[in-house]
Length: 137
Image (cartoon, rainbow, N blue to C red; front, side, top):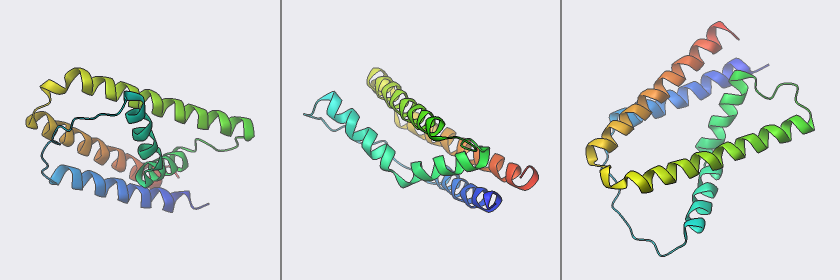
């Protein structure tokens, strides 16, 4: 019943994040040596990512916007949850492997271009949500 307003509120947040990412200038993080294991680093990163309010809000907006969970029973909901967790684990694994492999090539220019691409992606996603909420809900 409130899908349009929730989608528009989420779109405003996503658009704001996109604008903020595009407009701010940041420096690449300084390299810090770690004494912990790779598994401990992976698990702590997953915990931070999954408990991040922005991540939770993004899933909430995506599910409400695209009607992903409509009419799912308990089995369907658990399958959806398992798919989200499996996707997050795969994403973090691939991301960590890419950083380890290419960290020597990650210059300040690389970080600026990556940040710009992410910001533009968020802006496009936010615009798409606004269009869907206004014209197709």
